[in-house]
Length: 480
Image (cartoon, rainbow, N blue to C red; front, side):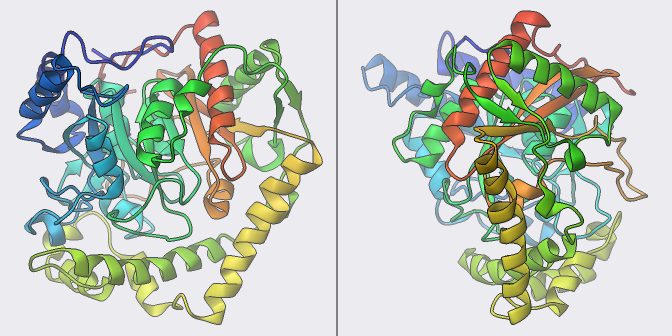
């Protein structure tokens, strides 16, 4: 049921937007009971599609994504649907008064909002032992490639929905891994843009320095097309998803810290590197980010928690209705509703944020400076410059871990923290199935390098499809 699983077909509703939406709604009736990706369907989705068809018939198409359905992560404001961040604290509130700018841009481009997708509650910043894909409002999202496996966090529903064929496109948000992880776990493309390229106004915040909304899709070209809409800067990123752009690219392989945690992910990534080289890219080994060796992750956490406290203090008062107006009030709500909110895990990170430094403190400033220096100035930018590289490539994540609502999740490693702290783009592209589960590679770049990453990612995707074919579609097995 997934449209454009390959890389050449355009994202167009056929034979009409209304017919396409009807197909997707039928698909949701069949499979979303298994994966639980969509927490709030849009009751007027078919009416939206009919209106877009009428415009197209009248010669008033709004652009390449006119009539194309999209799902939106439930931490992004929509004026006509609830925005809960997965929390019961916001579940009964009226819908936000305005669309987030990125949603407004999608509507202006003629896209059809199908509904909201479940997420890891509060975008996975509530507790250090959380279960990805669970929220008190939306329940538990499961991986369509194995229903006992995690859909990743925090854009769990967005990744699972695209993989399950519930929509060709979905919006996620990433602070550190929240687009890349569900893209890797669910076998779809995820594009986390440079921080600031897509506005975060109307997005429930974690970190002003790291939050970045972006697309999840079934191909790099689709992701690029949606990025062009939500960025609103006039750049046609999809125009860079064309053949022949890998030749001459210089791509570094930082093996020391970002390979070696998963034999399955490593083996697939090695094959991906071989395909890149066969397509004319120059592969440069020994491009390690030495500035990040032994880097204290507590600095990043301090920054995130300080910015979370400030961000919620600014965002929550914009919401109508009787809702918490600060992080402290959210913590109090959760304690009062512990039987539903704190059933599976606590809120240790929220409590740590309340007790920790503020964004105006010397501790925050010093931690943020160390994050930028290690990840950006002496990290990604230094390595790209020293080796004259266009990008870096690494495995994304190990195959999806089992869902565990009792113990903390086990993730042996990932690739996301350097680009997260730097605020730089990261493009994740599926490679193959390993033991029945998707694995992926991620392409890292410097600020504003999305077009280059699209060229590289599309080139790899095309080579993958010519040699081994695209990933098989999920079959929703109970256990892998």
